[in-house]
Figure: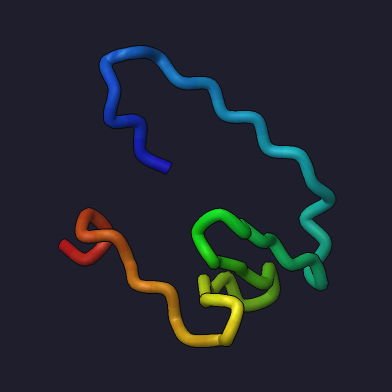
Length: 55
Protein backbone atom coordinates (compact mmCIF):
# COMPACT_ATOMS: atom_id res chain seq x y z
CA UNK A 1 0.00 0.00 0.00
CA UNK A 2 1.36 3.38 -1.00
CA UNK A 3 -0.17 6.62 0.24
CA UNK A 4 0.31 9.04 -2.65
CA UNK A 5 -1.62 11.86 -0.98
CA UNK A 6 -0.36 14.55 1.34
CA UNK A 7 -2.81 13.42 4.04
CA UNK A 8 -1.98 10.95 6.79
CA UNK A 9 -3.37 7.47 6.13
CA UNK A 10 -4.66 4.90 8.59
CA UNK A 11 -4.51 1.20 7.75
CA UNK A 12 -6.41 -1.44 9.72
CA UNK A 13 -5.79 -5.10 9.04
CA UNK A 14 -7.99 -7.78 10.58
CA UNK A 15 -7.26 -11.46 10.24
CA UNK A 16 -5.97 -14.58 11.88
CA UNK A 17 -2.75 -14.94 9.85
CA UNK A 18 -3.61 -18.61 9.44
CA UNK A 19 -1.23 -20.21 6.92
CA UNK A 20 -4.22 -21.62 4.98
CA UNK A 21 -5.95 -18.22 4.61
CA UNK A 22 -6.37 -16.71 1.16
CA UNK A 23 -6.80 -12.97 0.71
CA UNK A 24 -8.93 -11.80 -2.22
CA UNK A 25 -9.33 -8.36 -3.74
CA UNK A 26 -12.22 -8.78 -6.17
CA UNK A 27 -12.18 -5.19 -7.41
CA UNK A 28 -8.71 -5.65 -8.95
CA UNK A 29 -8.83 -9.41 -9.73
CA UNK A 30 -6.08 -10.27 -7.22
CA UNK A 31 -5.63 -12.90 -4.54
CA UNK A 32 -2.80 -14.12 -2.33
CA UNK A 33 -2.25 -17.29 -0.33
CA UNK A 34 -0.50 -16.68 2.98
CA UNK A 35 1.59 -19.83 2.65
CA UNK A 36 3.54 -18.55 -0.37
CA UNK A 37 2.82 -14.81 -0.33
CA UNK A 38 2.48 -14.57 -4.11
CA UNK A 39 -0.17 -12.35 -5.67
CA UNK A 40 -2.06 -13.88 -8.58
CA UNK A 41 -5.15 -13.21 -10.67
CA UNK A 42 -8.24 -15.40 -10.24
CA UNK A 43 -7.05 -17.60 -13.12
CA UNK A 44 -3.70 -18.17 -11.37
CA UNK A 45 -1.50 -15.99 -13.59
CA UNK A 46 1.02 -13.90 -11.62
CA UNK A 47 -0.05 -10.39 -10.70
CA UNK A 48 2.48 -7.83 -11.98
CA UNK A 49 4.61 -6.03 -9.41
CA UNK A 50 4.15 -2.26 -9.20
CA UNK A 51 6.93 -0.18 -10.77
CA UNK A 52 8.09 0.95 -7.30
CA UNK A 53 8.76 -2.66 -6.22
CA UNK A 54 10.79 -3.45 -9.36
CA UNK A 55 13.41 -0.75 -8.90
